[in-house]
Image (tube, rainbow, N blue to C red; front, top):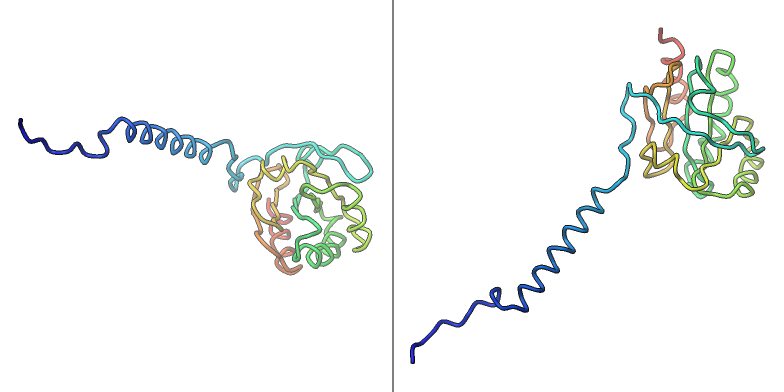
Length: 182
């Protein structure tokens, strides 16, 4: 009788089954990770178009309804600790620059209208608030954290993005650049 080396563990039928299953799980995970999450719009690209509703139920088409205006899309939620201060701080900037062509749209992400209305009343917000109840608009803009502000030029193209809390001075400076752009 001849002596044989024992077969390596990886050549056994049970190891092959486990190996195949591991490959399937790994490939499935990679497909999900590379899935359908849209990329954020790049500077100079047309802003993703959407329709949203205000707290009064009016439908708003962005950017179509604001052609010829500089638009700031500010994504927020009431649980965001930075959003409260920033929303109040941006209100005077919106009031000062409204007649020069600025529209500030506060897009609430994934909260119900009653919660949003209470929050806005508490801060005395007088600029338009749009509801993104299912988060689809935020996903289209690649929003992963709050607050985030996208700046659109008069032609509806993305011209900038402010990630995190923006002081009124920083926000105003960025907006003024767009208001004075040819």
